[in-house]
Length: 192
Image (tube, rainbow, N blue to C red):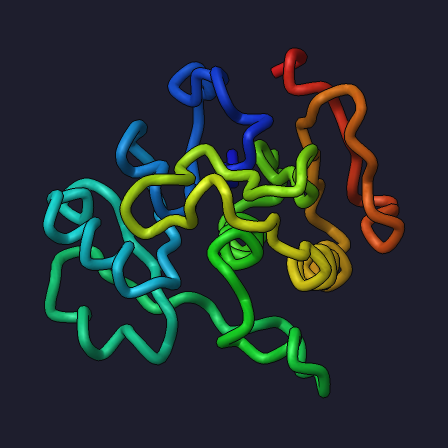
């Protein structure tokens, strides 16, 4: 199972050369056909419906938004979190599309390959291949603090110890400390 984030390390990577089931986040629907698409933002769910993406792709959204869209073809509710936490970043509504896509990948497959999960920006501005497009931040906006993503994806790795997660990244990317688990490895994106 391939899970695609929208970090700039994915720029120029031909997603269609990955054979097997694919989970993507939001704007990837504009460029590639996914088997599963995670859209936690209502604007992205609506774009998937308006563009007809939901006719060939299962689109997952939040519990809160699901009743509004469930009458449409292939719209599903995201899975429940595998744990309960006391911190704000453990609340389901605080989870973004990326962490939910990793969770969905873990629920659907025993082997999960992550591509485009950069976490940190190389500059002080937004790191996203869809910046400056509808539903996304301007390229001049400050980079997103990745602490929530790091914690949330780390929780998926922790709660699914029998799943194998491989993160494909550029050669200078550093794995977060809480991701250094026996079931998580890093490889170069060029090796895919």
